[in-house]
Every structure is written in C-alpha cells, then in structure tokens.
Amino acid sequence: MSPRFADGAGVDSVAAMATELRDSHGRVMRDLRVSVTDRCNFRCLYCLPETEEAANFYRTRWTGAGTTVASVPIAYEWKPRSELLSHEEIERVVRVGAGLGIDKVRVTGGEPLMRQGVEELVGRLSAVRGVRDLAMTTNGFLFGRKAKALQEAGLRRVSFSMDSLDRVNFLRMTGRDGLAEVLDGIRLARELGMTPVKVNAVVIRGMNDHEVEALVEFGRQEGLSMRFIEFMPLDASRAWQRDMVVTGAELLGRLRARWEMEPVGVPERSAETARRWRFADGRGEVGIIAPVSEPFCGHCNRLRLTADGKVRTCLFSIEEHDLRPMLRGGATDEELAGRLVEIVRGKEAGHRIGKADFVQPARTMSCIGG
Ligand code: SAM
Ligand code: SF4
Image (cartoon, rainbow, N blue to C red; front, side):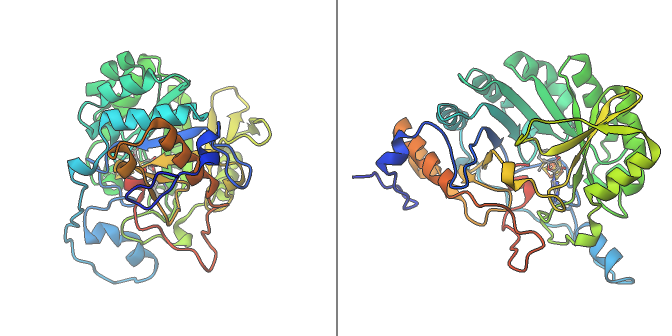
C-alpha cells in the first residue's frame, strides 16, 4: 500500500519508479529555487512594504489623488524557526530532486544572506551530485561580509537585485538606505570572478522607470548583465495594478530608440526567462523578463521549495505541497522522490494574470522565493 503522510498525500508506485520530473504538459523540471528564509532586511514596496503609506504609494498615486494613508508600520509574521527546514532537510530535498534531473539550484528568500550559516548550506548544496549550477539571488546588502565564505563553499554565480542608482529613490523603493553597500557587493562579486554577475531591477511606472537608461549604462560600464523584470502581482499589499507594469515591449522600444541592439538567439524551447539583447557596439547585453505581458509558462522548467518545506509548481500556484511531514516523519528517499514526481504531474499549464479567474496567491514573493 502507498505510504500516507500528514498532509494526506499518497505516493503511488508508478510515481516512485519515475526517473524524471515530467508534468502532464510534457515539461521536464530541471531548476529548483530554494527559499531559505522568509525574513528580509529590506522592505521593497513591491514585495514587503514597510508601512501602510509605502504599501499604498502607488494606489494613491494611480487611483486616488489626494488620498492620504497613515504611516503605520506593517507587522509581518515570520515563520517560527522550528517550521523552517533545516540545512540537512533542504540538502535532502535537493539531493532527491537531483536524482530526478534537477541540475540547477538557486538559493533565494526572503533574503538568503539573513539565514544563519548560509555558507554551510551552500557548501552542502554545492556537493550534491548532479547539481551543475548553484546560484543565489540576493539584495546584496550583506554580500560583502559573506562573499569569500560563499565562494569557498562553492557558490559560483550571484544575481543582485537593485532597482535604482539614486540613493533617495533606492531608499524609497527598498525602505533602506543601502545603495552603497549593494554597489560594493556587486563590484566585489565581479572582483571575485563570480561571472556573469546579473543585476535585476523590477520596473514600476512612476517609481523607477525614469532610471532604466541609467541602469543600462551602469551595466555596460561595469560589465554586468542588467535585467529588467515586469512588476508581478505578488506584493504583500496587493496594490499591483496593470498600469504600473512597464511591459517588456515598451521597455525594449525605449532601449532600441537609444542603442542599436540585436537579439541573442536562444535554443528553441529554452527555459530561459529573459529575452536577451546584445549591444551592437559590443559593450554588453541586457535582458528583459516579461512574465506578465509575454508569459513563458510553456517552457517553464522550475519548481520552488519554500523555507517551510512546501513545494510550489508555479509562482502563482494557489496550492502548495507540504514535504515537511514526510521529511520529519521517516519517509524514505524513494517515497520523497515519488511524491515529487506526483506533485510535478499536477503542475499548472500557466499563470492566469489578466484572466477573469486570476487569484493572487496568499503568499508573497518573499515567502515563495523569487
Ligand atoms: N531578497 C532577495 C532579492 O531581493 O534579490 C531574494 C528574494 S526576492 C523575492 C527575488 C526577486 O524577486 C528579486 O529580484 C525581486 O526584485 C523580485 N520580486 C519581488 N517581488 C516582486 C514582484 N512583485 N514582481 C516582480 N519581481 C519581484
Ligand atoms: Fe526583501 Fe528581496 Fe522582497 Fe526586497 S524583493 S523585500 S530584498 S525579499
């Protein structure tokens, strides 16, 4: 009989024998994003806004001219430590996933550098057989303190998030006066040879879209791969509105008006999310990630593991699959593998942003792991 666990999940024997994570739409999962904490030292407006005022900045800006919102701090409830997966548990899920074809792992959060002993965890993950690409996404504020140890532990690639090059606007967007530290972190990553260093910026109309060209110039000067991401409805305040999204097409139009650019070809059915453009003068490239206006769900090969042990098959999943009862309840690796196979079979065809039946997930990007 199939073993059953506290979340009611069963593992059938066919699933237990599978050797890859193939969903019912024919997509094979290769990329696992592991959120190692739901906490963060930043308070980005589009993710974890600090106050009601920050949360409503764009709501009042876009719909309610003259509306005032009190500057009341928003209290977030972080998961108690006991509910977070331990390093050993995370390593085990990654190892079992790698046995099923996962070869790319990204450590994220919340802010991954806030996780105590993250270097030790990176060391464990880099030693997992089959993981050929181990990367991290960070806001970069603490990177300077941990960079060397992370590199020694086996981290080869880092993506930074930096939405503004203007100290005041950076503070407005992230809630922290941390631009200098982030810039130092980005430069350090380059010095350490963690290339290509990618820098992601979420572009929000009226907030930082006037900085796009400056960010591109910065990337070109510093030899970084700058990537622009459309704002997605995953903010804690649920203030997202379509008007705030600067679409990939609009952005590209602006960039092409200023620079001569040519597309970087990618293999057909590549799971890459960024459309990449190379500057004709040979000075670097830029990526545009447009999940809202040009969904890439058809080629998606990603799975996500939340810090508290839930598997999500899509950023916009409404349902999560709890592995913790299995991890803490004596399940074997085969049973875990079988459960992962079953979960992946049910992966949704794509997100429903813009459709009448779209439902914003209960958890925000900081919990899901971007
Ligand atoms: N704290 C780290 C950081 O900011 O890089 C890692 C976690 S963060 C959730 C991962 C990525 O998600 C960041 O690049 C961030 O800009 C992006 N992100 C967060 N909320 C978003 C939203 N509502 N729409 C689009 N991207 C978002
Ligand atoms: Fe923190 Fe990253 Fe969310 Fe900003 S985007 S609040 S840095 S988790």
